[in-house]
Image 1 (cartoon, rainbow, N blue to C red):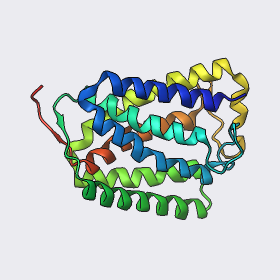
Image 2 (cartoon, rainbow, N blue to C red):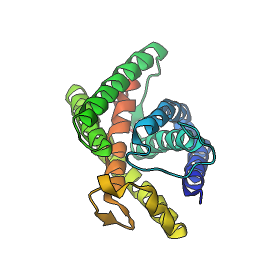
Image 3 (cartoon, helix red, strand yellow):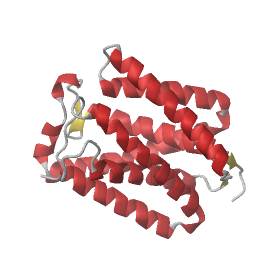
Image 4 (spheres, helix red, strand yellow):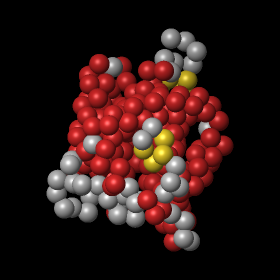
Amino acid sequence: MHSYLVTSLFLTALCLAGLWLVPRHRTPALLSAVLGVPGAAYSLVFVPTYWNPVRILALPIGIEDVLFSFANGGLVWLLVAVWTPGIRVSIDAATVAKRWLAVTAAFTLLLVVIARAGVPVMHAGLVGAAVIFGALLWLCPAYWPLAVRGAIAFTILYGAILFGSLQLWPGALSQWNTRVLSGIVFLGAPVEEVVWALAYGALYPVVMAFFLDARMSHRR
């Protein structure tokens, strides 16, 4: 049962289709996808504590994790960019690298510290994300519409795909560690997955906008 692989491949196909269909946003969306790939390393923390998916290869960081991270990074920016016609970005490699390192280090530190305090890893990740989110919106309050649009669009997309996956593979629900979950099920999936989608959809576009020094205008 390789539901994680199939889901990741489907998300990747959607992302690649979006990159092809929306050439105006192709470069920043591709960069968003590529910068999302290192997030696959967080599987070292989440597996098997939060969940233990079936993978095609017994690797600490699976091919599925890489595809999943790439696809989500690209899709969330595409969704937000299409919904924000006046958005403009500036891609400066040095600025992107410095800001990416700073945000990644801050989030990783928060995740590790909070998790070591005894908080379940997904909850620790959500708290860390909330801290980064608050700090970035304090620095760049103009980005809040991106957060709202990302949370709505990405949660709908991810929720639909997750629901469809669990309908095709009902046994996939057993991949999550019920001992660290709330026990609340929404649309057949642990509610933590839906909360994660909301958090990711809200945070990642704001993070990318910060990396790319995004500006928004009302002109179309």
